[in-house]
Image (cartoon, rainbow, N blue to C red; front, top):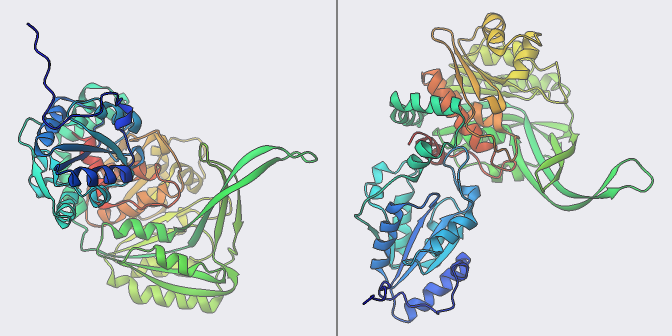
Length: 525
């Protein structure tokens, strides 16, 4: 005689409830949890990415279900998943539906935050359930589990750990799903064999007490989102309809925020125009450990780059620059040089973010070169300075980070391969023993005068917005070079930072230390 399958105790639901009906907003889940508690049920919460649901997850959710009369599972939204190229494998809707199909799960939600704290504040579970691999807080590279424990206990709940078998979704995906191109697979495997995960974490940790000074151009990045409505009736142009806008503190300010997550103290020296200075916006967007020192220019605006963007695919239609890129007046130039000269030697590292918009003159370069304990430089080529803002302006630096077109322009060599340009041109023209040239979707080339070159493949080909990716690469890697990191490790970390940055629109978020460590850990599983 066949027996009727048993459902877990307390899992009775309305019989016609479909799998998709179990997927609700986080706010709705908070209301459901409150109603369950009022009815005398204990609420358990499980949270994760659940990119590839496996037996470890099944056992984990079974254990979580046993803790309470109601199990809510939340999964991280696609845009907040920092687990490497091509991740998540499955989009958030499919991941949520897969979880909802499991018999142990009562309700499912999608969280659009980087950690579970907002979910915990809304749902207020009696039990927040994690796998045994999270039981030792020192093993959590993100440091989130400590904050999550505080949050759940704040609402009277308790953090508990399951004791069953565990697997790593990232390890299974990395090893068996063939999600990476062959060059990247080979490079990651070599890094694993060399024990790179621990070395990378140690290198990142080595700069936590650094003091960093950034000198460079102020830029406001304004995004105007527009939709095409058709060709204008009497002109050969496309008419667009304005939808909304975002304004970001870009340039040196974005670079400083990247550095600030890795180093103890950061200071900016820059210039703002008194007309449309955007100073309030700038100061409100800087992280707490970033200090701003300003030289003001009368009668000019702070440089603003306005991009008109079709939001469907984040495609830029055209740009408008509002700026005065003429050199500083002599008295302002002298004042800037005095500021830099008086401060540079007090910092472990000076980063010159030279966008070629008139701030950094030859006299300022002399001060930077002669007064910095360690100088890292990027000279950006853009539509306003093409051919005029070359890295060869700097006779000496501890570290140079530019992209391939900028390297070829500086060498006045259009056709040679980038490796030749680095060895035969840049390293001979500039007294610099450590250089990285970025290649976009080809990754980067690292150069060390004493140890040669390394080619590191790109970690992602999924690009949302390239604005600021080079700045993120420079900002994260410069302290690591100054700390004596080997260039193969530095380039790996830079590629990870760049891959994370191209998934971010504008400067909505900066690269954070915990997220970067997590990203690299998942790559090397």
